[in-house]
Length: 374
Image (cartoon, rainbow, N blue to C red; front, side, top):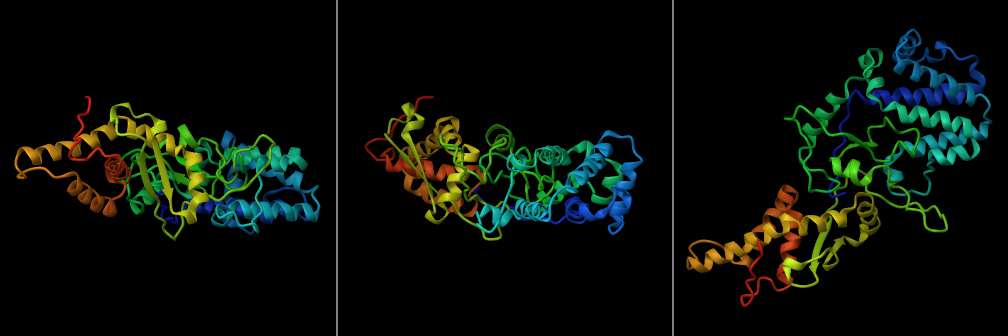
């Protein structure tokens, strides 16, 4: 992740607060709570109103929510105190996104598959419930929307604060902002297809460009390395999307040769830093296909256009005896300043790395001045 988002508090957080109450005060106390009924929600007046509205509704979304809460309550009644304690650790771990991303060994997390090993029926119900929570048909129900607000309003508040206009997961694609009538999709950073308990936690919901969300990340698991042939499960560090400690990723581009028209992906080496974030960077590259995408951009129209721009400036300077144009060194100095000020505008961070790689490969040597095929 090239830069973190600023977290934006919003009324929508109340949905996670409702789920917190259901988990801790209803499900985890099922053994002593008696028969399932609306009285179990009396201590949370707003949630009680929602549940009552759902109880008397024949809308599918209402039946989905109320029915799953009731069925899971019934399955929790059979759990021992030790098993309930384990579920509480899992619930807290899956919702402690910052510590989870840091791979804190004190944080215990669980995937649907982990729960199903010892609690098959309960695991199936939890999976269905938490996968279905982030559903427009549910979130748009009047009884619920009156309490938690609207996700489109959350997005507007989010992009009004986060004004970069670029996807922080790739840095090369725009995000729809406050002056657009549409919005980007929210990505479940820990995929709801894999993880229960946090599918409506807005610290796990991050706007991302279409390619990051739907083409590359899909349901990849940021918190675990892909299984090796032996099936070993290994946790890993990952950038926390709402970190309050900004980081800067260094990018150096090295070209294997100076024949720009015949460069292939294998000829481009991308070196990322800093070293103290190596594990997070490796995770980021894996999850979002960063190296493939950056090489594709450099070998596509953009890389060649950037190089032509430098060469044209150089030619104009020579042809006008310095009245117009810039030398490559002057161009790179100016670009370096622009990159420092606005690294993600016009993909400056990638453009700067590529053109410096071109210089290192000798493309700007006075004796060369290569011609570029159209």
